Length: 321
Image (tube, rainbow, N blue to C red; front, side):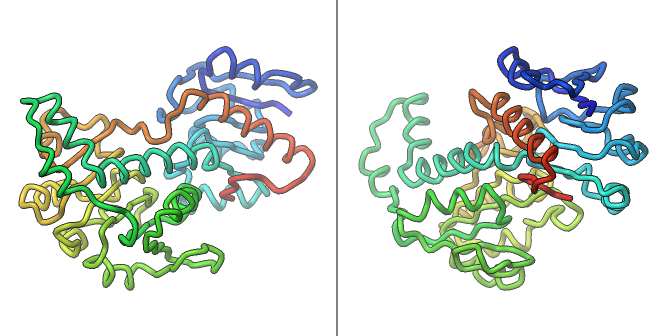
């Protein structure tokens, strides 16, 4: 097998990727990226390959029938989620996998930390420390919340959501998931999109982990955001395109909801003059939810384990197609 890669991994991850790979051949794209959020373009070396690991160009993959398996270094796969791509891969019994299991833990921990921080008024206390150093003890104590008994609605019930539910469960929250096609093994109450709209006014927390797709473009629009309670908190760690940011800014400015936390935006980076930066009830991190110190090692380990499964003809982890 010839394995193509366009990721610029650090030395320790490179060692893990290439260790004991014989008799297989590892080749690299002419252009390599340190960030797996960057999308690669066509590369002449991909023509030689049977397996692609990284971010290949979808159009080029379609045109290469010898390319049998693509493993993405991201959880998202929007560029590959087209009828043409799916048809091409299926016609040659190909495989598409992503790296969802690598990012489930850090993303769930990240947004769980924000749920906890906002409940305990930690960002507000930090604002006071960085600002005029008041001592608003009574105000912050009075605004702090217990999670026990509060309700949360989670949109996009994939690996991140399942791990988040495990973290939230000890707090005895009322957890409901939203999924178009329910499987019955989610372990929590589940509703479809239409029923979720009726629940929004009663939710304390609304968690958006929706992937990007034509069906989710501006899913949280002015109408849906207006259904939220004035005491609700909204979180987006899915994709920026799923949210109408102009509508959110208007609702936050008028204090129609308690606040919002965004790890993803449109565009990225979010321009410094964007209104969301200036709102005191909006908290933003620069798409860091999935980041962790051994991220690249875990990506490579995930690929090597899937490679072993592929060569043995076993089922693949994080298989999309």
